[in-house]
Length: 157
Image 1 (cartoon, rainbow, N blue to C red):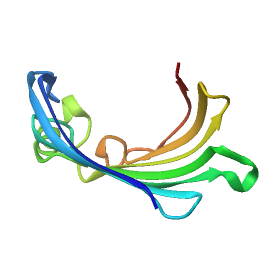
Image 2: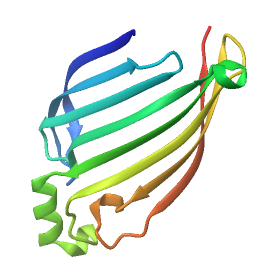
Image 3: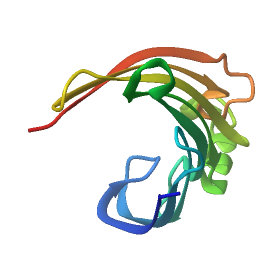
Image 4: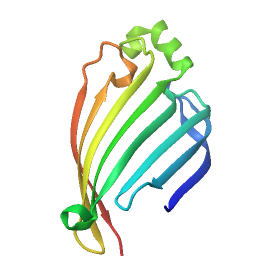
């Protein structure tokens, strides 16, 4: 079955650290999309920040997308994804040392889930309504979960 495998790196000389100072940020990542049946594609992403003082320095997402061929809309798709953003050790230390600025001691990982449906309107327009849930926002162990409803649009010419 066809798949897409990517490795990438980034560098930004004028990025912003979590304390609002400017510094170079860099990192690398991997992205995998693999069709496992005629209608199901599984995907995974990993990103790792190597320089710069950021709130989260590693991210891992996994998920799958089922195309709409089984309900007569082959260009549509329904997907489910889950992700974890790991708190960087520098941000964990800074947030624990100064609760007045950050409001909580960050620890562990923020967790995100998304359910979406991609609607293929024509060769130029797709709309994707989604429902997202963020658990432990900002890696706050006591933080209340957040539910988001959104719509993405892709327009091509």
